[in-house]
Length: 261
Image: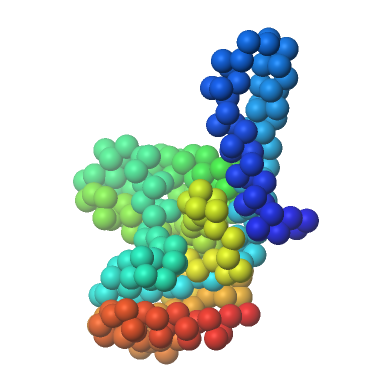
């Protein structure tokens, strides 16, 4: 990429300042000056779209995913964000967002259907356009997904299974990078590493992410926080803690820093 993250942040800030001057421009007396400056503002608004895409791409190249599993995973994520400047997200956010856009009557006390999957696919198509995911495997109904659903919890498990089978769980990482970029750009973030904490109680999902997020970056780490974590994930983890303390979180992040590619 031609622009560094630092120069992108500077340019984006300048464009935002120009756009923010629109009210003052409209109050000027000279119509020619108003038209000229409004033209610059309109161009800045278009430029911001391209600059944001560049910024998001640069963030992806610097991303380090920290996958946290265990009964204290949420506590770890909160401490890592407030105390150490990490960006944290529930690892289920992508799936939950898709499901929130699907009518509840389609998955409440009824069997899953091709029509339900059509809704999943349509909602994903819209999100895929937003974050510029192309060339993915189509999401379609299969007999293995023919299950009785009682409500949101069952539907969430189904949508995770289907997406991870057909599309690949790395989509969670791409979705997370976009969400982080939306926040980071407003904070003028320009760090050399973008630490993204994805936390969950779903061991299957964390295990899947630990493999598939390596398609996006070589910096993927597992941390266990709390109790009742299976041995396979513990063996994969760079740091394990039974209780979440500032000291333990700091130690785990330092260990991750030592192992960055």
